Image 1 (tube, rainbow, N blue to C red):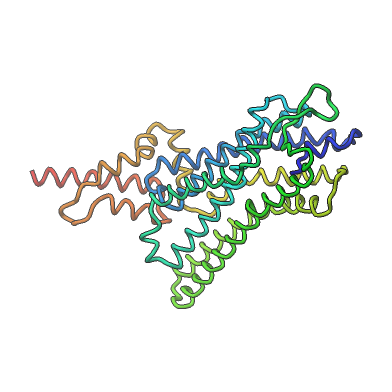
Image 2: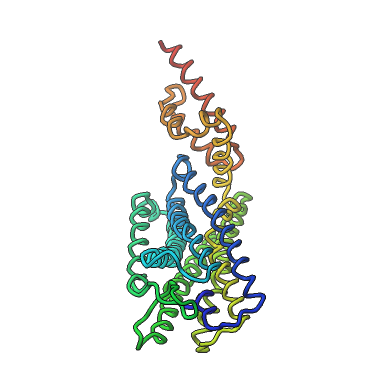
Length: 380
């Protein structure tokens, strides 16, 4: 598979653009790494810490965030390699890099595919969804995604490693090293293998699932013309189109260029090819950074949870009232004998309400606690 590093090895003459390129790419890698780690770390935090975020769909988002964090943690090694022009992290780290890269490549695509299938079941088969959309099954599917990613990336485990640099004596590069008599054929086969399993097939399934989802939502919208149904239809449609568009926009140029190189049987790289491949590679890596921004943009619950997390970090009082959401829910989940319903049920309803703010949710908890205390005093 072609990378900016091994394409650059094919020519000794380096133009001004190629001299500046490694520094530009390094800065972009650092920005993607820092912002991506912070964003995905925040996603993991809110899903694990806030009770209302522990949904089936969010378990898949958590899985995607874990995959992104592993990959983003390896970007500094690429940044250093781009500056010094050779690999200094050793044979073992080279294999680790390719394993993590493959997990992000295949695991990310497989996770999005499972998320689209989950959405299809939830919308098109709501009765079956009660049986199949459970946290236990979601956890099982996440484990299957990691296991399947490990199986399909076996070629990278077997053939990744360090080898001597073409032009820098005593230095090494990190790349896939195929058997000498099958190097060209194996590299081409691996590009097609990665393209089909890591992009083309998952994207095709995603489009099929979401086409059926949108078709179903249109049928629901046509049958029930209520304002709330139309709003819900627009929100889901925007979410679907945004998720698909961001993933495809980030990865399609990269894979198109890789397939073009294989199809045209290009062996000698030009300056424009190196520049294009570098840009497309950075764009594909940026997808791991953009995912948290995407969640915040299209999801009210994620946006409110992100705000609540920042409040937890900046205020001691907020830590007492907002951060301990799980313990608060357990504390006030006693049954109010006068109303016949639990406080936890009403708090959960308020969390679902997209118009409620974290402060309103907190006030509701305090009011219910006070009501329970007064009720207990009167009964005693």
